[in-house]
Image 1 (cartoon, one colour):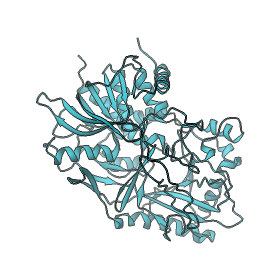
Image 2: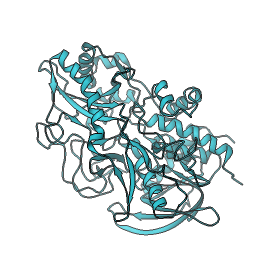
Image 3: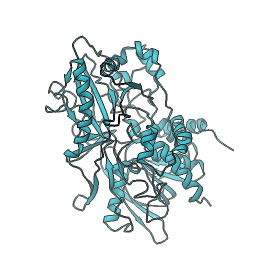
Length: 536
């Protein structure tokens, strides 16, 4: 009997709820599910590519285990909320940190955003590599728990440039629409946008951009804009309007645990094991893969290490996680046939953050939606392509500040190298490699400031710099499609080993990347199921 996606989601959501109530770390629709020692298919991670892969494997009847190093975020704490807000972060906010590490390091050179916290398996991690830091989500749903929900499909001409081996007709005719439908992408009501308090900050930035001759565009989202309207009307609990962004959203956001992952669990063939970190991968003589899995509790205590085997292994641990696993496996000799392309082609998606100081008359308002809905779109500029998200500063008071996350076309790429001393894959990236991003953003915003008689903010990043490019929200690459893998994510040198996440994309998408990651995963798993997977 064919089961609809909506029915699968319903069954999966019921499974997630029952796990929370029982305090379990193994999530399944099967009541007797336990941690497995072998599974025909294992998916490492629960982010976008991993969630797509698990759903399609489960729907095809393939028993599949997902291994997630973070926890399931489905249980309210003592304050009645699952997640903490940006303004009052606590231990739920960050992954085993003693102090929060927010992207805005200061305001008027005062560190008002960060607080000391108890180390805990929190929802956001900032992985630091010297000159570059990377924000990643930790928990069932990965980055979907902590991003700004901006569901942007890249310009077709640029997609064809970065992934020329992928059939663009197929992607734009089938897989991008499928991804957006499954993710629950929706668009803001333009009339409401013009009148609501929550986007006054975006309207101020729009006016400044238009005066400088730049166009703006509404950005689709996986945050429910109908819910947001009711938030502003005081009809439902606030989330996007309650300074809930990078540390998770309690209401309104369609994260993966409410879409792909719920549907995957609803197939009855998918199990998620939480607080389970894969440390090593090797291959046995019969071709199956052996995984060393470290189990922890929410306070970081190691509960044990066990071995698990799989015939089909899918890496969906993100650009950092998947790349590290294969770099370590190659350089320790556990998967010696992996090639030199492993660890190459990593990029920041050209991320650079900046702020502008508005005139006193240009009030941005004390209420700012945490979910961006507008961007300055100059990506078609042949000389200086930039897509700049108009980002909020949800401080709960008037700041006269406009904040932007600019996405630029930076050709610089980093490389991961294995460090035996720390047993880590370490990113090789120099601060000057981010300079092309600063130069591109500066050309755009110099013009905006000149026309509007405004200036940069120099107080937001902990020192006196106007541009911050020492972190990225959008890590991409490391296991590039067609180089480390074939054209469908099959890892070169090994059968039944696949990559299914943002590490396939060579460093840049020109927009927020999660829709591209999702659509590419849909395309790849369709091919793999048709050609590789044997269920008998």
